[in-house]
Length: 314
Picture 1 (cartoon, rainbow, N blue to C red):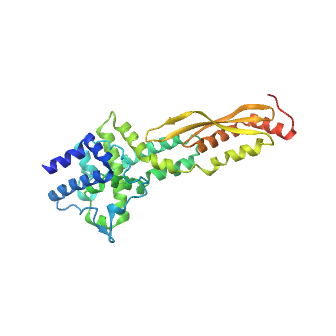
Picture 2: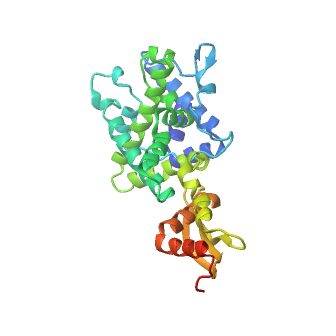
Picture 3: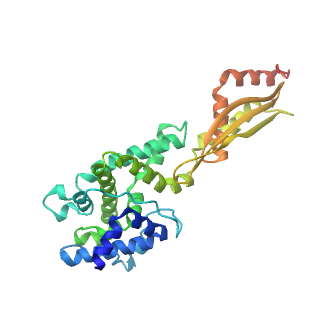
């Protein structure tokens, strides 16, 4: 009776969401209970990951840099609609001679989907970011430490069938949890050809939102305001950074701000120089300054007026 109820909670999207809303600890406890039932039927499974390693509980201490505040709502876990795929997601290749019943192939496909979603998200979140910085931010989102942390948050570690010795090897165990997370992503997409990918994209966007909020914009971009001021500022001249329209709400709680930079001085009044977007007003302002600097004909004209000391045309 209890075993069936536990399985229903994990497999039903609505009930899983209720648990997630109540907190990650509750969802993890249900997953660990389900694992206990599975262990009773499969004595060869590894012992629960919550056992002590070096005197410390892995579940209590392995947060892998999630950055989530305690009690924060966990994004809805998209379901795997194919039960055989779901079973494979949580089965280590070392636990079966048939790789189709393990996550061996799934984690490769899941890794590709995660890379794609992360790249698109960073691309759209940080307009104008150079490719090198896009790669750096993407790596923060997709690295094993991050994915393993999410796997722990959802109780994937408690459902995993892995070799016993893995639990006493923290680095290998972390890599395994990351692989399981990647396999889960692939299984969601494969089990729902119509909505699977969009469900995964929405879910990952929400998961990554706290990390993106904490990321500093690249220093080269944050110097744009200073560079613009150096080119055209002078006595009695004003550069004004203005919200051009309200922030755009993104999935996961993020906002995109829109700021324009305007010049008053050297014969111009409230002259629009450029506009920019960003996750904060300061970032958006720097993007606006960068856009202004890229309008070289206008900036050169203003700089020439500044140099000559004569008023430009209104």
